[in-house]
Figure 1 (cartoon, rainbow, N blue to C red):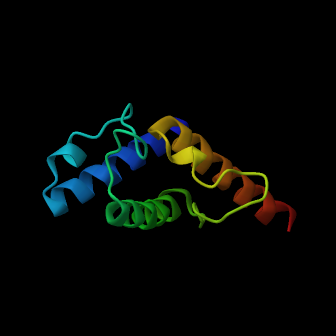
Figure 2 (cartoon, one colour; figure 1 turned 180 degrees about the horizontal axis):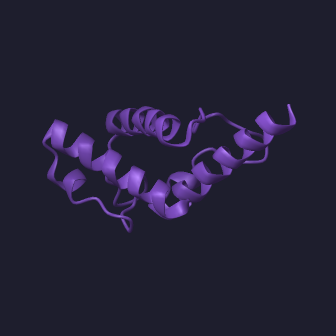
Length: 104
């Protein structure tokens, strides 16, 4: 599942890069920094990216997640430092949502 999520993340950033004509987003890959000292996305692109990623995840995995929903046990932005950490976080949200729908 993680590799599929990584692919969706990278594809989503590439799409934004093409639509906004931003070369560094078109070169985005699984090793790119999402936010940080050499971040790929500005604040507006980051919001668009999160929204589009949630839409893609809903379509691909048939589950709706809220990536930026805060939780007392999670640092809200720690998962946005790179693609693998975001993929892990999205995978966790998918599993939690699936577990809650099975038990609830």
